Structure formats: structure tokens, C-alpha cells
Length: 101
Image (cartoon, rainbow, N blue to C red; front, side, top):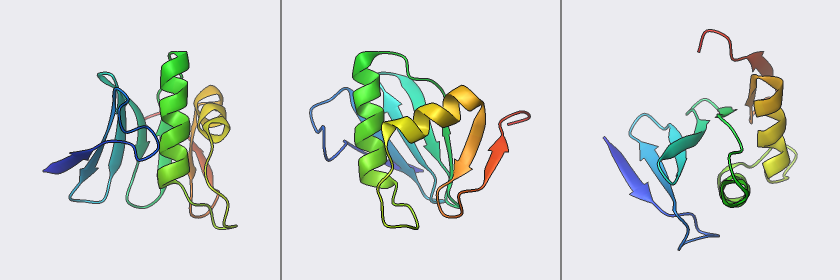
């Protein structure tokens, strides 16, 4: 089961946020899952897609990613993880390759 909401910073965008009972959060831009944030802090990005989706990613990161140093997540953080082919743990800063996921 999950609940669906909009992005606080882009409430009229074609993006939705799904919060699952297990604590996982998915950001869906149009009909594509773009960001996965697991309950234990692992963030993965499946692509940057379009200019509009880039804005959706930025809004999601600003709203849902709070780093240990007090800063907010950014589009560039998600883009770097995508281009590098890794997941990043937003709580610890640890990275791991996406192979096998």
C-alpha cells in the first residue's frame, strides 16, 4: 500500500510522490519512476529525461532530502549519482554501485 501526493514546491506539476508503508518514497515524473529513496536512506535516480523532469527532481530533492550537515539535497546530487551509476545514502554519504539492483 502507498499514499500519493504532489510535490510541495511544484503542486501543479505532472509529478507525484508515492510513500509506501515500509518507508520507501518514489518520485514519478509523468509516468516514469525517476527517484527512489529507501527507508534506510539509499537514493537512486533512473535518469534526468527532460527539462521539466529536471525541475521535478530538484523539487523532490529540496523537499525530501536533508543531509547530515543540514543542507538540502539538490538536482546535481541526483544527477551525479545517475551519471556515476551509483546509489548514495543520504544519511551516511556512503555510495554503492547500482549493479545487481
